[in-house]
Image (spheres, rainbow, N blue to C red):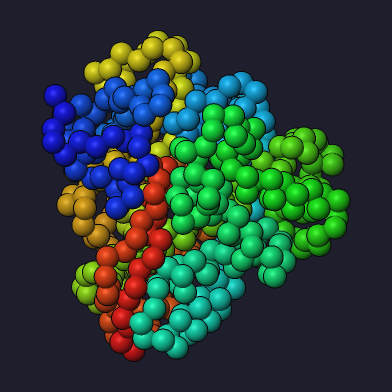
Length: 411
């Protein structure tokens, strides 16, 4: 029997005031692979323990991404229209990943450190012109947006618009980001568009202009390299490139933004964390601890390819299986004091960004670098940071994010 603190994990409203950690804690302790009733759907298995998440995430032959990675069911036509390499399994998945991986490797990202530091310093200096401000808007949002533009090779003048459209895509359940709220749409609206969002139409048009060279992109950027490789190998059809572009704009910004935002939220509510950062003893471990607690992408879905067992559950072929990374990252059997930020935590086997499986996010090294450098520059220039009120959170069971955080700074 579910306890009184249990909330409906299929309902975006259950997350609008932050992650329902009490529900996940109860499930980990009592029913770690739990059959979950779904609002307007057929139901799914909620996998909430670290070990079970790792087991399923590492077995893509049984737990497949090839029917979508979100809770929503799709027809075969919808899946083919919307999919990116995220929604494929090996060996198909490896083809695109092999093309992209060099640009996002640890070595490649380390070459951006000076650029990241210069941008971070400018962002911090600009934000500190006021002593009270929204730290998400003036700090957390800025660096991922700027770096995304530089890595992809996009014009700086277009970044604000692109990020706004990316927010509408991945924040498709939040009325602050879109008027076309995904769980309130008519059944057939936008069903062939990424994230079922009309923002994808505008991003498709932008991607088409890139392909037609009506928008100038940097020849050393990822987009230019992908298009050049595609000429020879035809890895992506035109509509697949457009879907890929939408994915980069949405996921390439939001996950890092919300990791930084969570770090700022934790520091603003615990003065000891800033003191610990100022010792300069924890920069090798602190970024992963903030990313663990942020868990910006809260889950990925898999679909069972056959009857199988996971934990004590008997899973049937075609059942939806939701890997709740946000829960696994607070499993007390793995993480001591799991809800506490321990900047020296090592090892830190968190599953943020889908780590532990073949689909882990290519942007993990960039996220670590941006979190680290931005917090280094901020901690050098302030004596204290304090939250002035409660933050606002994304209305989403997919993306966890602090949307706004009003703070007071002492320099």
